[in-house]
Length: 213
View (tube, rainbow, N blue to C red):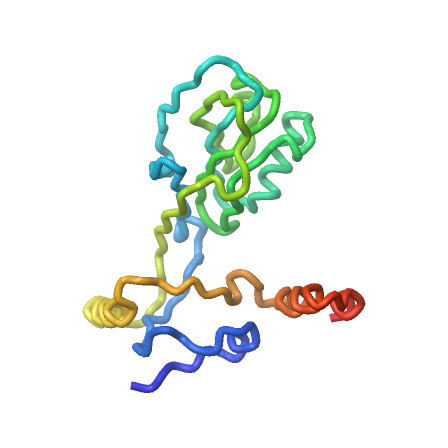
């Protein structure tokens, strides 16, 4: 079976081949925010499930307050900025382990410096929920997570259920249960995907060329 050639846009970003040779199922993702759910898995491998209280022990008041941020159709950085505005503090006082998708429902742990549970409970923002409060001596840093659990709805595949299952099974067999961590338009975008080109010039210390791309 011949390898499937990726779209030209993907090739331009360096994704020149696919690991599997079987045809995919087509379709569209993220038609609605509810079609793409990202639930953070914290370091002890518990999942921050949407609409579910985790019952973290609150503990005595300390320097940092950790909480779960559940957001719908919000960019992580924009959500953090809005929360900081409502609290009347710098956004630098809030930290998290990693950004989550915008057009999705997502959960993640966030820490805030020198604020109380009562302060956070006063924050009311549409499509944002703050819960699972816990005081800590430490802030949350980039990478302080085990991973993410994705639940994805794929619409408009134009294939029957049996054909979808067969194609997915073939791909799983080809990949031997492993998923390559490709970086394509998901990271670089489609409007002006030049991040990788700028980065290359920066690494070569060609700063003027990087700015002019």
